[in-house]
Image 1 (tube, rainbow, N blue to C red):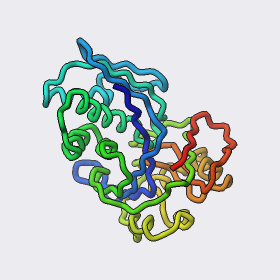
Image 2: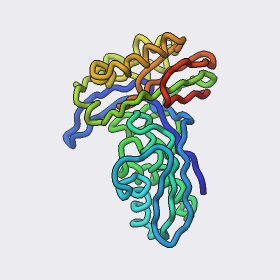
Image 3: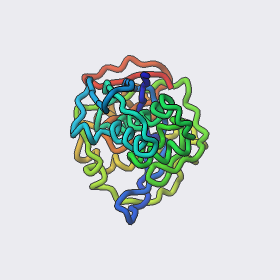
Length: 267
């Protein structure tokens, strides 16, 4: 079986509280986009994981794809599989690519072995992998709170718009991004700002809190956002805690950029 784990962008991102467990509560709109990896899973005599494309740092045993398999194997004693991941979504970009890969493994194994797991059950398993992982189970636009694991409906319509995502050659760790963050509750709720304002008004009201801590230390990321606006974006923002910046455009654009990791598509 082959699937295509996709990325997501954050439309607005507030860090509201630091929790007793060391994590942070957030508020954001998660929106799926079609910058995608390629994942194949087939039955095998022993568990195997290989990858190609963008190099994945760290030990393969700690990859979220392996961890996802082990969660279901422990619970349901499923047979071993061979997994191959062709990595396309940039790493350290705030696009949720690794989280998506892990979540898609859960969904694929559920289908391959006919486990008949509900969306809620899959989301519970995905929460064991990481904060962003449950989102990729239903994979629909959501207003999220908690650590990114509590989902609410949101009335957002940006269909027909065009998206450009640029990932500069910088890897931002989550720890670095959070280092300069001071949690606070915003005066206006992201959900309300999105639902009650046109996209053209988002520029002056809808923000990613990580920009305040990241931009002063990485002016090249700031420059990407400025370039997107200069080329006609109606809204631009850094996504997640990573280095990628996206722009939403009314029309398809021929972006002139020297960056190697660029994705364009329709919303």
